[in-house]
Length: 367
Image 1 (cartoon, rainbow, N blue to C red):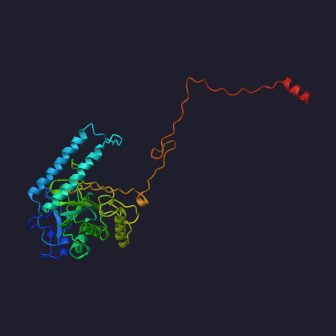
Image 2: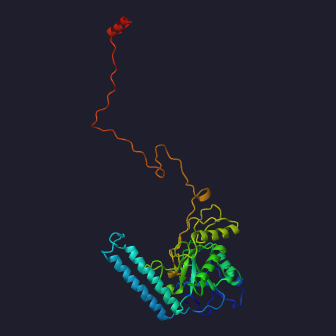
Image 3: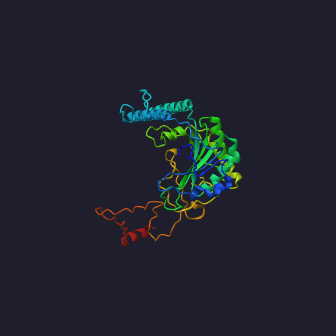
């Protein structure tokens, strides 16, 4: 199996030439019901608009890309070890910081990789998102139907696939995420990538991780790579490096949830939104050790689902009655009581003035 095409006779692939209807295929092959085998081959459930073909990633292209990345890795290590490059920039002396020096090299490497991909035709790629285990089945089904006959069918998206359960998971209720991918024949086509991004936000409410070229996957470039080269070419969160602003992304997703009549509900990755409405995320679940079933396809680590706190709304802390004298360590530290100084002499009470009888007599005579 490659990153862009499954082997012949692959059981979890549907195309228009398949014998069974898409609805039957999706009902029979739910990603949350298919467990990886002992060899951890990480199968995907795969839906494509035509029979997938392997991307034109010739070995020469992959080797050239690896050489670019290796060169950056070496230079980054040299920068870190160079004591003459300060940690903080010094504008007076015209010295760049280590971070600035690294980013300059990494930015150039991203441009070199793009040039190589365009020159050699290795331009395929995918939008990625992490989907919560409890939401993956219906969400993938809607995406597959959208690709074949819905909103995605009007874009240049060509395939959707999702990872299945991890091999060796303790049980089917273990909280984890599935990496979902929507493929495009040219991920560097900014207009096409933005069009697909808008559909995924507006019509499916996805929280996108980023867009990644297949070439990056082939050379093992991920967010933890020692070269530090960004592992995606388009970010899914807005701001610099994204095809949409953060406000545009929020507006599109809010419109989707409003259309569903739920407001801002729990995210597809399992984290809870600020709204009190929406489905409650399961409590007391263990997080899977390996959140991303695709390895190098990970832009950021899969977000860990937030656990709801007991009580109404899931945000208030519970309290208990404390015995008298017990301090509330969560709210404030116990007050310190001053200890008496053993060497200091005890304070004397002020002496009372004695009024003599003679004094009283003198006072009365003066009146």
